View 1 (spheres, helix red, strand yellow):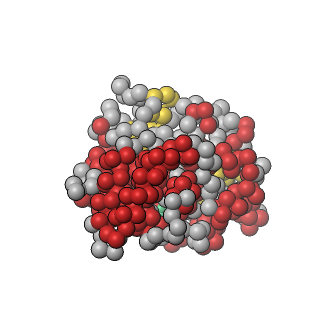
View 2 (tube, protein in one colour; view 1 turned 135 degrees about the vertical axis):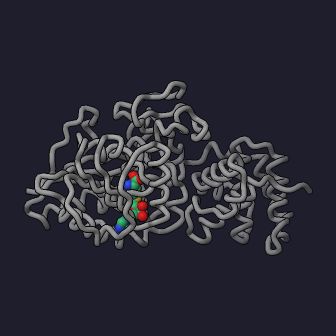
View 3 (cartoon, helix red, strand yellow; view 1 turned 60 degrees about the vertical axis):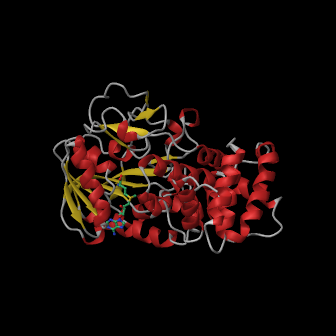
Length: 413
Ligand SMILES: C[S@@+](CC[C@H](N)C(=O)[O-])C[C@H]1O[C@@H](n2cnc3c(N)ncnc32)[C@H](O)[C@@H]1O
């Protein structure tokens, strides 16, 4: 038998690491050994399987008497998703058989994988079309239905299944040759996915990749030209780049040295400057004209682009994160000059990490005020009853969606 495609083999490893070890897709060791095109293909395949896990398991269950070893199951899931998406049966089945044949613990399942995938190839695609849009796991679905209602959550699940388009934030003018549309908020949405580093303007640092919703917190700060701005949780740096491009004197703070390196690389590529500080936001000192607090959170607003997220953990860290968000907000307020503006933002769909943080902070700090948001690109239904903006992946469905975010503009006194 011939060697399996490196992308399929790496995709199975990625599935093992998410579903067995609870690690994110982005940390694949095997990925580093692949050429860029194979690396991208492995990531795409693993993401496609995770988006369709519920459907794959439903189809496979019909052909399995008992659950096999997790790695064998992941090979079957990969094969099933590819076959049901129209993949050529011969290549998919023989690669999947070869992948299990390579492992000492899994080689006994060669016959099973061959037999099950042949049955899937025969009737899977017809059955697939009848299956519902995969649901979020219970730990996340329940609080989201409570917060936004069942219909909205169904819209979010459809957005998660469809994935996210690639949005760019321009440093200045739009370079020639990019194909897509400029959104009402100013981001540029690419018409097609592909290798971004090969696109016009990348090498010159004319733009950076940033979801359209993620670009809004900085826009809420308004004109920052010449102001001292603290970007309190800065890495990988999309918002630092925006602030620097708008003429702010930026201090980009992050606890992770490794992630700050990404900020440094991004600044360098785009020819922009910021002071980089590695450290704990809770211990940082200074006084700033404006502060951006893009706080660490469950990141549940980014499931469209990180389909591993609902499967890698069960939300066990959310309580810890909620406490950290409140401490960070209190500390940020102590670093804000009188009359200065602060944006609080989280890429979470859970109100405890967004709207509730602001409601509780307003109770803790009698001198804290929400500022009105007057930008003309704000759509009425984005405005939250708690003040600020609530973005959701089911918004702008006709345009390809938005990441989930909550953001509010605050001042003291
Ligand atoms: C949501 S991400 C920030 C994204 C970033 N603002 C951007 O637009 O690219 C949150 C960041 O908070 C950082 N972080 C977590 N705990 C921190 C702490 N105690 N002090 C400073 N940064 C922290 C993480 O390393 C992570 O990079």
